[in-house]
Image (cartoon, rainbow, N blue to C red; front, side):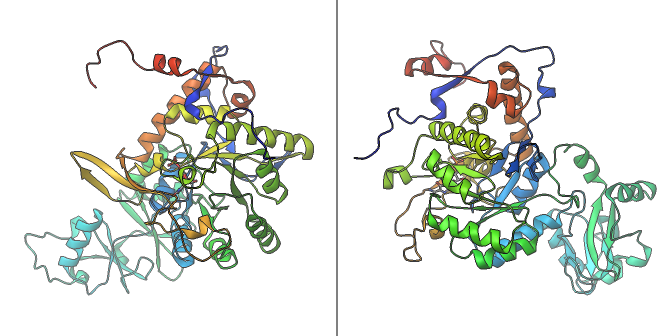
Length: 495
Ligand code: MZP
C-alpha cells in the first residue's frame, strides 16, 4: 500500500512567527545574516560562506553576469544558468571573475584608426565616457591611448577624424602596473587628480580601469562577497548529462561553486554526477537537488552533496504540480528536510546547508524559510524584476515589466533539467513564460527586503540565522486569521 503523510503539506503563507523577548542589544544594526554555503565538519568553519542568505536562481531570465556582480556586491551569490552552451556559460563565469571589486574590464574600445563618429556611437551605446584605444580594438589589447569627453568637440570636428589624432596617447597617461592593490590605485587617482587609471600588464596590455566614481560605490558595499583575490564570487549550474565537459570548463573559468540544476534530485543521475566530480575534481564544491523530504536529503547527503536544495513545484513560473502531480508545499518540505539535516549532523558530525528554492512571494517568507531551518534561499521571480536581470524591460498597459520564463517552458527548452534518461528533448512544458513588475536596481530591493528580515529577527529576539532556526516560535494560521492580517474593514484611500 502507498505511504500517506498524515498532515497536508503547507506553504509559507500558512505560518506566522510569534515574537520572543527583545533585549536592548537586539537591534537591526546588530543582526548578522551570514550563513554557511557548503558542508563543514563539526567544530570547523565552512570553506564558503554567504554574507546574506540569498542566491539567484539557475535560470536564463535571472542569473546572467550583470546580476551576478550586483548580487555579489550585496553579499549573496548567483548561479549562472546552465541552459546554454558550455563555452557561453564558462565565458559568463570568466567575465564575472574578471570583475574584481573596483577593477573594471574596459567595455568601450576602439582602434587608433577608428574615427570620431565611432567614438560618439560607442558612447551612445554604452553610456560610458572613457574609451580605451587599443592596437586591435579589444578590451585587453595593447593600450595606445584613451579618449574621454575632454579630448574632442563634436560640434567643431570632422566626424571622420581618426582617433589617433585626438586621443591622449599612453605616453602622457598615468598608468598602474598589474598587481596594484585597490588602495594603491585609489591613492594614484587622488594624488594625480585623475578620473580613471588604466592598469596594464607587463607587456602593456590593458587589464582594467579603476574609476574615481567607483570609490564611493565600493565603500558603500560593505557586505560584498569576494574570493581571496578580491574577485566577486559566482556559482554555476550544471546538469547530469554533459558534466564531463561542462565542469572542467567552469572550473577553468574560475567558478567558486557548482550546483546540479534539476527539477527532481533523488536520482541515480545525481549520484553519478557527484561521484564523477568528487573523483576528478575533489576540491570543487557542488550542491545538488531538488528534494522535498528526508529520504531525498539523506540520499544526496550520502552521495557527498555540499548543500542540498529543497523545492518541487513551488516556483512562481512552475506548473510541475499541475502537469505531473508531484511536489510538496514548500514550508513543509523545508521543515522536514531541515530536521533531516540536523539529525544527519548529530549522527555524522557533518553539517550540510539546505537551501529553500522557489515560492518566496513576500519578504516575510524569507524570514519564515530561514526560521523553518533553511540556511539560505534561492529566488527567481524576485531577482528577475531588477534592472540587472538579463531580460528586456517593457512597457505593458502603462506599467513597466520585465520578462520572466521558467526553465521548463518552451522558451528555455532546458530539457536536461527535466531529464530522466529519455530522449534529448522537452516532451511537455513544466513552466510558463510571463511578465513580472519591474522593481528598479537590485541593491535597493535587496536592502529593503533584508531590512524587514533584520527587523523581524529582532522581534523574535535573535541576532543571527542559527539562533533564528533554534529559537523561532511558529504558528499555523487559520484562513480567517489570514484575512485579519491584511488591512480590513476600512475603506482604503489608495488601492
Ligand atoms: P520563484 O523564485 O520564481 O518562485 O522560483 C524559482 C525556482 O523555480 C527556480 O530556482 C527553480 O528551482 C524553479 N524553476 C525554474 N524553472 C521552472 C519551470 O519552468 C521551475 N518549471 O520550476
